Each structure stands twice: as structure tokens, then as C-alpha cells.
Length: 248
Image 1 (cartoon, rainbow, N blue to C red):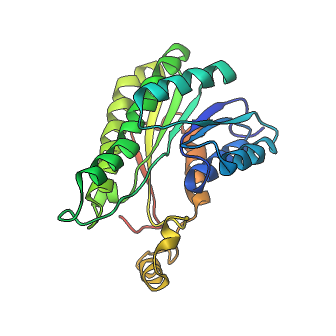
Image 2: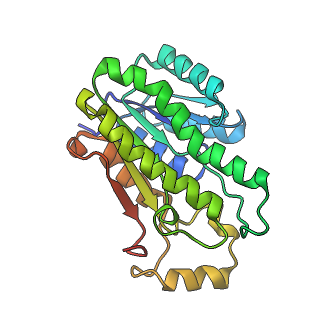
Image 3: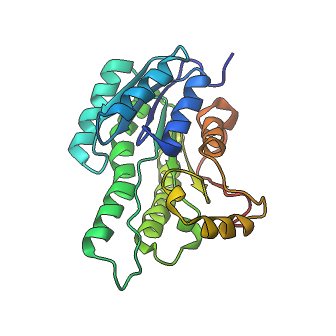
């Protein structure tokens, strides 16, 4: 028996990167996956096909996670298609890095809305389903910079720190109904986004990590599977860093 057999999960921002790795890992463990991204494009279609290859139900939905009404509509559509929701992975996120003195209001607002408000939107929409079920696992993607901060990322750091506070609060609010809420804080993970970093800077960063390598999306996905499964049935309100001991 696979770890997530029969479960239904929503994974936001899952057409690429960490979100896609989580969706694939879930499908490999028997989970049916509804996933979202901003556009219904070739990446979404390819991801949907790949997920279905593991013998599970899978469907992609075009959704702007930062929009409250759009999120509510999509969650209702997912429930209609899948009947229930056991796991929510709030992964959708962006960066618009700049030193504070150069950061525009738009850069601040966009990152906060996509990274933080999206977590509120989806959790708010999904909680009514989980409350009726009296069960559920909410997994929020934060970051080590949400714990320790980082120069040039005040907007991103603030959004990811906000996710941690939200995660802990929801764990207190919903725990009595059997709903768990946890956060994952990835460190330096090798994705399309980090691939844009110059090679010399990337190598210097990797050398500063005790495990002497950058993480992979699969490293994060493995922790997400643990938090989605019954193996973590008494784990709630926690932040698990996946950073190779970079942030200890």
C-alpha cells in the first residue's frame, strides 16, 4: 500500500519546480491530484499527463491564487470533480528582489499578494471542506529567508515569515477538528529560478551549506509526502527546514 492511497490533494503553482515535484511525488504515492497554475498552457497539460501515468486521477486548473473570488470558484470546481480534499499544499509563489531603497510599491504588493494572500485564499476556501470531514493536512511552503531574512528580499522574506505565523495560528484554530497545519522552509533549492544565479555565486552558496550541495525539488517533495501522510498524524504547527543545515 502506498502512503497516500485514496487521498485527494490540491497543489498550487504545480506546473513546474517544487510544486510539480510535490505533485509527482504525491501521485507516485497513490494520491489523486488537483493542481493549479496561472495559465492553462503546455506545461500544465504535460504535468497533467505525467501525473495520470501513475494511475491516479489528475487535473490542472488555471487560477490566480492571489484573487479571493477566483480561488473560491476553483476550489468549488475541484470539490465537484474530486468529491473531497484531504491535503492542501500552498506552493504558489514569486520573487521580485530589490534592495528596499529601490523596491517599488508594486514589487512589494505583488509578492505579498501572490505569496501570502494566496495562502489565506486557498486555506479559507478549503477549510470549510476539511471542517465537515473533520480531517485534513495543510502544508504551506515558506522559506529559510522567512526565518532568517535576506538582504534584497524584504518583500519575499516578509511574505514567507507571514506564512509561518499563519501556519501556526491555523494549527491552533483547526486542530480540534483533526486538521493539521505545517510549513516547509526550503533553503537553496536548484530550480529554474535559482538556475539564473551566476555559476560562481551558486558554487559559493553551495560551499557555505554543511551538506555541500543545493537541494532538489524532490528533497522538498519527500517532506511534503510525510506531512500529507498518516506518518505525521501528530505533527502540527511546525516549520520543517529543508536546507542542508544552512539555517540552524
